[in-house]
Image (tube, rainbow, N blue to C red):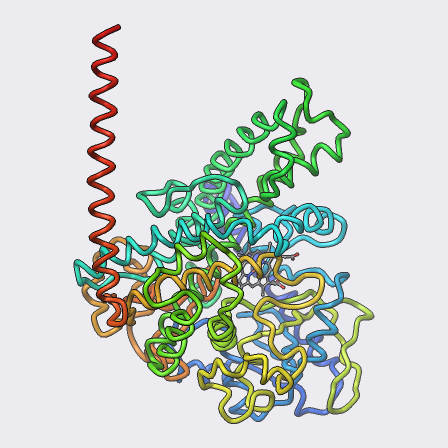
Length: 588
Ligand code: HEM
């Protein structure tokens, strides 16, 4: 005892360890009881154990996104569409749901909270009041406040902004085409999606496309400190410095977004009429505030309560986060799948030629008439098919006492209390029982209107369905259609995993992660498999090469020439104005 009195640090460490051990034993026993109480028949219970998962894991890349596991488990052990999975203590006791109707029933129930694993991941970035992980009245309030900002009508007004960002993205691709060097495609698509979501939600330019963006750096840092739930190394899983870094980056993100919010708030006062027409997320948040507090928007004495400000920042952060990460990865997979399937690439290019004409860039046409984008039916089918094969996320709900799901095969009512109710959309999307023997093949034609009747209801859920579906899905689809329309004919973009070594020292988030570079490097026969880093991201940020597309090589050269001439004209006229001003200054 005296030893502990003399060494308080050792005493603290020892007692923390003891506490942790007791907690672990208690929860271990509880989990065992949970599984033992489950009803039969036994084939519905995959007594997961590490052995089963280990067998599958040994055939997959180390860092592959865990949402692919149910695909392989189901196939390997011929599992039914609903089964329990026991991977404790690596993961929460889980009920895997691969039946479309059961998934629909569970996820349409807004009274089931999001699972605590999601809250644990999102809270360090966006607090507890954010609409992604909260539920009940808090979720309802913020969801209803932001809904109008994502209506199709409002989004069509954003087309010019999105086109501007995709034009800046074209310049980045142009530079990569000129240097001919390998680069990480996901890093570049992220710049574009950050700027688009920044303008759509905050009416603010985060300037990721034009240089080093403080906001982008902070987001990437926060994401790099998200918990490593896959590692078997307890130090990785419970990194002692993680809470510190989280707090620090969250504080800086709060400062950044708080400033944007405050500026908007000040600008609104006395400017109500003009601003009232806007429906960006930030304006909607402020409208919510004025509604709640019953204050006069025009009054100089109007104030923002600390609690409202805190919650508004968290909700803006969650929109900014969810609105860039998923879309950036999906854009990469669009290019990847098209480059792997030249016949589909030819088809999408043909559609752009038909819709926008062969001689004019899509950007100019879209600025004239945004509704041209709605004519790109094949493009939408390509994006949908990419999201079927590579959905960046999945959904989980917290089961509860008295809430049962009906097994579609046996009719048994299965308990859910203390279980994660998991709908891994990728496993449902690649299930041959639903999609047929070609489930793993890239066939955008599935989503053309003439084939609509062949789709199994509720089996396609990249954005989830029901009241908690993705608020930003229309924005994401619009954004991706525009980006493809403005780049697919202009460039050939190809993954370059065989040249990955050249990026070893690029200082990116990926270069530092050595753990994923050895062993098996393919999943579903593809090197660009998804890893879990907030959303499902293409491994290593998808190293890629870009070349000017053959189809429009001539046109791009002409555009470049035109831009050059335009640029020099602008410079000449600027110089003239400056000289004129200079003369005027001298005169006065
Ligand atoms: C390819 C792009 C996207 C995909 C695949 C996607 C997917 C999803 C999915 C699956 C959910 C449900 C999550 C759950 O049930 O736990 C969700 C929710 C959400 N998404 Fe997206 N998303 C995308 C783009 C966006 C964009 C652009 C925004 C930005 C505004 C956004 C904001 C949100 C928010 C705020 C929620 C929570 C909604 C709620 O619970 O009421 N997402 N998204």
